[in-house]
Amino acid sequence: MCGILGLINFSDRPVAPEGLKAMSATMIDRGPDGAGIYTQGRLGFGHRRLKVIDLTQSSQQPMVDSQLGLGIVFNGAIYNYKELRKELEQKGYTFFSHGDTETILKAYHAWGEQFIHRLNGMFAFAIWERDSERVLLARDRLGIKPLYYSESSTQFRFASTLPALLAGGGVSTDIDPIALHHYLMFHAVVPAPYTLLAGVRKLEPGTMMVIEPTGERRHHAYWQLSFDPREDEKNLTEQDWEDRVYNGLRTAVRRRLVADVSVGVLLSGGLDSSLIVGLLAAEGATGLNTFSIGFETVEEEKGDEFFYSDIIAKEFSTQHHKLPVDSNNVLPNLLNCIHAMSEPMVSHDAIGFYLLSKEVSKHVTVVQSGQGADEIFAGYHWYPPMLNSHNPVMDYRNVFFDREQEEFCRVVHSRFHQEDHSQRFVEKHFSQPGASRAIDQALRLDTTIMLVDDPVKRVDNMTMAWSLEARVPFLDHEVVELAARVPAEMKIAQGGKGILKEVARRVIPHEVIDRPKGYFPVPALKYLRGPYWEMVQDALSSKASQHRELCQQAYVDELLERPDDHITPLRGSKLWQLGLLELWLQSHQI
Image 1 (cartoon, rainbow, N blue to C red):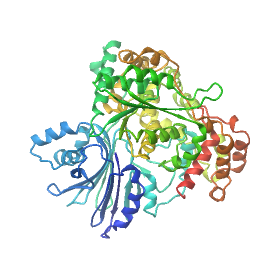
Image 2 (image 1 turned 60 degrees about the horizontal axis):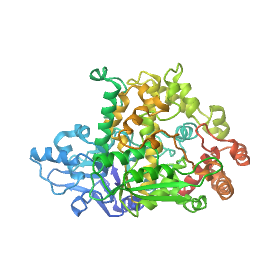
Image 3 (image 1 turned 90 degrees about the vertical axis):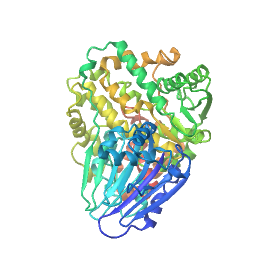
Image 4 (image 1 turned 45 degrees about the vertical axis):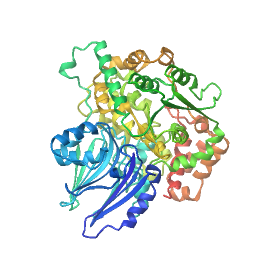
C-alpha cells in the first residue's frame, strides 16, 4: 500500500521535481517507509512506500527496468504475483527483486494491455514506456485503490489522493454542480469520474487509460460485472452454490495473507468480519491479532458489538484488542479525520475507522476487513422489495436518496438548480445490459458504484492515515463475479445474506449469525449536541462559507434549529452532511 503521483507535459518542457515533491509531501502517511522521484524529460513520477511485500530496497519505486525500457509507480497488492512470476520466468524473464511491482512491469511487456486480466488484487498504477513516452494508468476492478487526476490542454497530473493534486497548484476548485447533486441526493456518493471539485476527476474502477505523447487519451473499461446466469450453472442446487461460495471465500482470504509482515483482522463482531476470522483459522492461521471499536450506548441505541466480537475471539483464540471510545474523545480527533478524507464522507464509520486504525497500526501493518459483503450478498433492507419491483428506479430512490429534488433546490444556491442528475444516473445505470431483474440492477449499482465511493474509499483513507494497509476479501473480483450469479432469492433469504449465513454455519458460532444486523452510529454525529453542534454552526456561519454561497441560509438555519428532525432515510444527519462538506473544504483550504 503506497501513494503514487505523476505529471505529464504535452510540450517539450521538462518536468520540475519541485512540483512532484510538493505532491509527495502530502502523502507521507500513505508511505512512510520510503520516497522517490523520477523524471524523464516531460515525464515525472513519484512514490511513497509502505513496505509490505519484499521489504528490501530492490522493490523501491519509482521502479525502472532499463532492459525493458519501462517504468512504474504502483499502489496496492497483487496476490497472485508469485504465480505470474513463475510463468514469466518460464518465458525467459529474469527478476532483480522479489515483489509484486516488478511482476506487473514484466507482465505488461509480455502480454501487452491484456495483462490486466491476469492480475488478482487491488491496484492503481502508472506504467510508462521510455522510448515512446506513452503512459498507461489503471485501477482495479472494484476501485479499492484510488486514482485522481487533473488535466488540461498542456498537462496531465495524477495522484492517489485529491489533496496531492491540489498541492501541485493550478487546479480549479470550483464546485462541480453534478457532483454536488450526487453528494446531497445520492447519500453522499459521488460516482467516478466526478469529484466535488470541477478540476479533479477520478479514474473509474475497472478502467485503463492510455495517454499518448500528443495528449490524446484513450479510456478502456476492461471489466464489467454481469448478473446473467452462465449456462453451466443453471442446474446448480442451493448446496452447489453454497459450496462454491465457501471455496471462493477461502481462496480469497488465503490470497490476502500474502505479505512479508503480519496480517490482522478488523473484527466488528458482525457476520462478515467474524467469517473472515473463521476462514483464516480454517486456513491454519493461528495467533491472529483482531481489533474492535465501540462507542457508548445512547438511550436504546447500542454503541458497540463487543459481546459478539468476544465470542469470535474466544472461539478462535485470537489476540483480541478492544478500543472503547467515549464521545468526548471523538471531537479532538475529528478535524484530523476530516483532513484525511480525499473526499467528504458523511458516514459515522469514518471516525470509527480512523480511531481504530490508529490503534491497529501499533500492532500490525496489514489487516483484512469485511467491507463489501452487504452489497454483493444483499444484506441491506432495500433489496427484498426490489425482487418484484415494477418501478425499480423509484423504489430504489425512495430508500436510498437523502432528499427529494424540491428539497435539494432549497438547500443550494440557485446557480446549482439543474436537472435531477442523480435520478438520471440511476436510470442510466439500471438500463445497462447484464442485469435484467430489478434486484440485480440495484445490487450491481451498489457493488460497482456505492460500495466504491462510500465504504471502500472510507476504509482506504482512514487506514492509510495511519500507514495501515487494508485488504477486503469479499471484494476479490472472482468472489464478486460468483456472488452476482447466485440467484437473488438465495441472497435475500433469512433477512438478507442468506447464502452467506449458510456458509458461515460451517465456520463460526451460530450466535453471531442469528442476530439482528448490527449498526452502531457515533451518537455525537447523528444527534448533534454541544461542541459538535457548535463546530458545525461555526463552520456554516464562517466568512469562508458565506463567501462560498453554496447553501441557502434559510435552510441551514432550519437544520441548526432542529437537527434531530432532519434525518435521512438511511439514518444520517442532514446537518452533519452540510457541516462536513464545509469543514472538508476549509480543511483543504478550498
